[in-house]
Amino acid sequence: MCGIAGWIDWENDLTRGDRKKQVKRMMEVLAHRGPDADGMWVSQRVSLVHRRLIVVDPEGGLQPMVRQAGNRNHVIVYNGELYNTDEVRQELQARGHNFYSRSDTEVILVGYLEWGPACVEHYNGIFAFAIWDDGDETLYLARDRMGVKPLFYSYQNNRFIFASEQKALLANPYVEPKINLEGLAEILLLGPARTPGHGVFKEISEIKPGHYLILNRNGLKTGTYWALESCHHEDDLKTTLEKARYLFCDAVSRQLVADVPVCTLLSGGVDSSAITAVAAQELKRQGNGPIHTYSVDFIDNDIHFKSNNFQPDSDNPWIKVMVEYLTTKHHYINLGTMEQIKALGAAVHARDLPGMADVDASLLLFCQQIKKGATVALSGECADEIFGGYPWFHREDLINSGTFPWSTNIDMREKVLSHDLRKRLNPRQYIQDRYQEALSEVPKIPGEGAREARIREILYLTITRWMPTLLDRKDRMSMAVGLEVRVPFCDHRLVEYAWNIPWGVKQLKGREKGLLRKALAGILPDDILWRKKSPYPKTHNPQYLQATKNLVKNILTDKNSPILPLINVSFVNNILKNSQKDIGLPWFGQLMGEAQFYAYLYQINCWLKAYKIQIV
Image 1 (cartoon, rainbow, N blue to C red):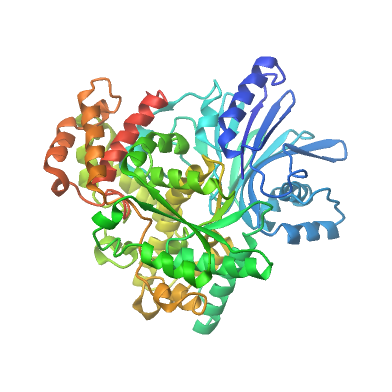
Image 2: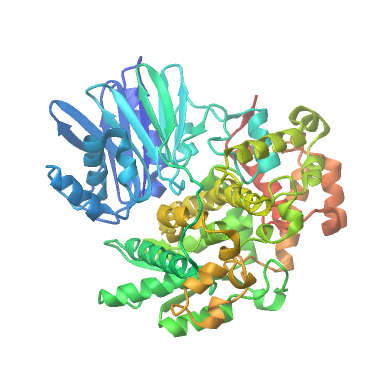
């Protein structure tokens, strides 16, 4: 994986020394994404920069990469990984193209020479890349179908600036850390989720998943090259199980490609266990192994853990089952309470926004430990999104909540706001507008039953509005320490196929993700296969709750805290005194309860202060 950035300017000469220094600063800010190498390509109108994390072909994958076609230069900067590199290379060779490396970077660039903007339709992978054609002065940017890799931009006054992360844009003097009412609404009403395409900062936008952007002297245009399509599922149950199993196993096998150590994240749940089992088998077939696996837990969780509907049991006994079953080389990572508190600010810097509080911070710390032994990791995100594993697929109150089902307590969101901001934001209207906007995108099937149509809506909301929050989290926390994390369940072929499987089939045997469990029969032990879903672990130590309360108390007593004009101080003070009974829990998703609510307020304040946010 890598970090990319660029600057296209139709009026200023970018070869000037001060301009080169400015774009070099953007590159330096992305050093964490690519600690192994850097590169820059500059012409009068364009600067492209790259930070590299070496995963495949150390010598042949240097960037920016230049390829000539006639008298025109084509220059690429690329972040990601292609999982069908060999197939695309062979197809391009058959069309007369030559290759000089093993790198997927060259394949993407040559693919653009052959197919133009349609090249992305040929690629299976996670990517964000930019290609500059100096012949007709055109920039082409594209982002992978599921949005695993990030890509942001700012376009103003004939000046176009893009980067993998917002912090690199803000390192350019022409992009300022400003936020308007809409940005505040994203943070306070939807957060830590975001509306697709919103960069939250004023004048920063995001290229949406499955989209491309073309820039030239005539202006800018964006388009969609991939979206979910609804159709009737024609396969019988046996065929459906076989296809789901094949697509999953093929995705895992493809994502093991690397010239550096690869590991898996193993929680003992169905998703991570299945990935580990297929990866272990494939590595054994290749004559490699044993596979290294990593899990995270929290000091004293064995003492303080309490079962609940969201987290029915501890992961550790199940991890032990899988480690013994597969004979993996396992690494137990245990984190302390104060470690997580101290990492809340670092997690904000990694994400460039307030995030999922300690759920982000603990992942950041976890990734730091993994990086000591591996450069690439496979993780189980997104199975719940495409196969229907979350509570809001099964609880009638959440299915029919009339809003985003992972954030239903709008009363609480309103009450936290200051009186002035509540009037200016009109919270219920903003949330409802974003909700209806999402529903309007759902691809319908004429004649589909009301129940099936509603579940399709919930699936669409989850894939396009919930899942990006987790993908953002995984990318930023891992890349903050130079670790590449791959997500096999995000393989677009698997997503496309699962999308149209009828709900009754997905919930085989009346179980969440029943189809997936049945499809994995023989790959996993039965007790793992049918284990009740358990989410990413979090600390249950009461010291963490008290520590987050103290953080917020300190904010409320500091008259210089930038969050104070935005929140109802007396209401938050009352919550601190009266505790959980006044909070509609969870605040967001399954994991953001009382302690995470306080930590989220702390992260907002930290973000406003550290980024010197101007509210306009």
